[in-house]
Length: 111
Length: 118
Image 1 (spheres, rainbow over the protein chains, first blue to last red):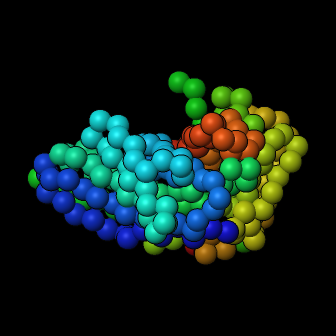
Image 2 (cartoon, helix red, strand yellow):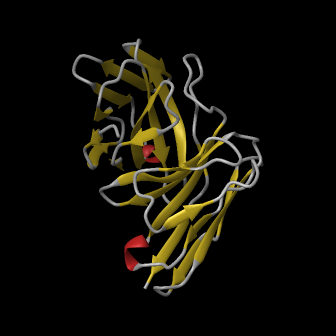
């Protein structure tokens, strides 16, 4: 299977920007996703990017993709305490009906 | 509210017992999945089903079995539970059989079933 790697923990102060990083195993064409898991709940899709894109912005969220380095990042601007959660990077390969998830990064926002 | 329902929410089970985790979706999605979540290991795929009547093995299938008799239900069975199967189990579904270009294939997750095997 594919290897998707993330650091386990990140702490930021409220109002600062958070950057969560992910590395993945490249494929010819891939969707890359960011899912958010709040305590005691399932995962919910935050945003996604296709591998022919470099950047995607959605309100406070910015996704950057460096295909050469196989590196994906999620930037959360003006981080709030409600952003405290586990963030999962995931990869899906076109034509293959499976998703490959990273270990998840636990984001703690300090008031 | 439409979505995925898992049951039970939480269960404590003696080793050696048989257990079935239930999963039902009302979105008419073709593909369904079972994952387990363990600290430091993220989500690992146990079994999946592309469509009713078919199933496939994921990354960690040993000790688990699934069936897909219809579109809506995808139960996960532990034939003889062991302590290493203590985990949080998530069922998920997707409306895509394959991740064709132009179709993002979002996964929809249930709330999870926390299983403790003693």
